[in-house]
Length: 527
Image (cartoon, rainbow, N blue to C red; front, side, top):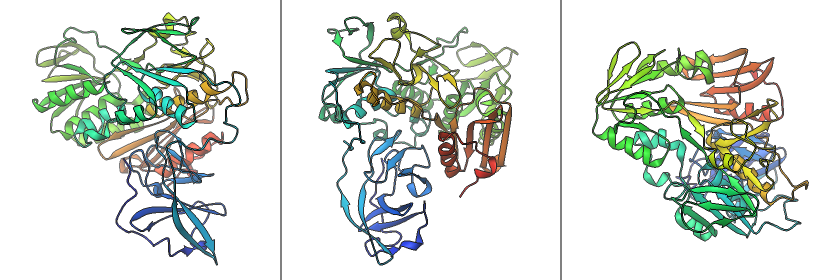
């Protein structure tokens, strides 16, 4: 979605710039011909790359340089400064790179280098043992798609079969509740890759097919139609299903859930012929749906059980700020409330109040889809239990994404996280470990910090870490002005950090927490 071609802006980097104009970590946007180019300094080295992230086109100059990578300010993708490789999801494609020469205290950007999707393997990654003949991936969402792509990027040339229960190609699920539902994202943004990509990379994509049973002994997967599929390695990335509301009328035709692209299109169709909607659940999905429907001009009511929306995840202060923002945009909240029935044109609350509703969207949470794993007798732990290498209790079978509960080195606990970026990063690590030797040093622990983002009108919240509970919330800045850092601590240790309007602070907090550094609030101010 990014494009490095732009109107000539900044200095002509082919003519050179003084080397002293960039300190360590500094970035400068210039141009080479009609291409927008980012010149960066890391230590005593200079690099030149494409100026925008290949995920959603964020300006990388607003990000940070950490080691030999540049990190995207919006969704925390990482790119290798030497090769352009997309090292860390959600970006899957590399950025362009240019040659840099330094002469007479001047830095010049010269010719563009060839960069391909098949990035160079890191040192030591070359397989020294027999690779599996075939890899099967159940699930064509974030984790499954990222794993399939990473297998090819690592040079694996065996059979890859990806099985997805939904029709079509893997798509950008987070956008369903945001710009796509609001009508601001074009249709071509939704597929992660065109169908031709999978054909060109010899990835067999079985769409609209459900896996019914795993036979671990003979390493065979039974599908709802067609012959069984055999595997040497198996990745389970079956995702999660919406929690269903069990009240009278919840099965009516005008009641919707949002999980799939088909769900989103059904809500868009309903919004086109309605004036009023009720969203049940003041969750991230619920509030993003509310914002999108307001963008379409609908009257929107939100029903939630808590005192403030999102309080359990973000705390009362940030939750109240987000509530006030929605109210300023016309959303009406019914909090501390429970739905008892859904009628033909109303939603009835326990208090007896009836809210007019031409259609209803329910967003009260999801449950991991673990039936396949349970039937295969894999070890369970409120999800599928995996090791630090994302391998299940059965050797050769891995799990990633919404279903996986793993030992998190940052909290010292086993956690399960339902976030897109986490799922993609787990898919990538699982791919590496499916190709690694069973006991070899080439195995990779999954130790990435969880990260997610949520968008509400013009406010975006970035969240790094994982805090299921905390005993201290420290706020630096002013939430009401959209310029703040919220730090969640337990036992004096930083567990998570949420930022509003401080993208660089979020990136630096992530980097610091990765190094197990305690982050003080005064260190998290915008650069």
